Image (tube, helix red, strand yellow):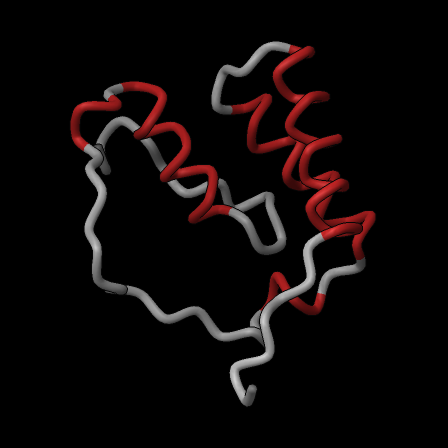
Length: 94
């Protein structure tokens, strides 16, 4: 996959996301569900520092670059906005 999909150095924060999306769209059979966490993301990383508008624009760009059509990109953008508006994380302290 690394020879086919290169990191997009023109993105501010979502190059890894584009790499995974392109790999998934190319061959879905190489991905499978694992019941235990294997990655821990920092909540204060570069992508968290981007303004909402910039995150949405980069998200649209990676989907378009990965080969998704206009309607798929717009649907994904709207879905992402709805998640950001309505998702309330559970408080782990309770």
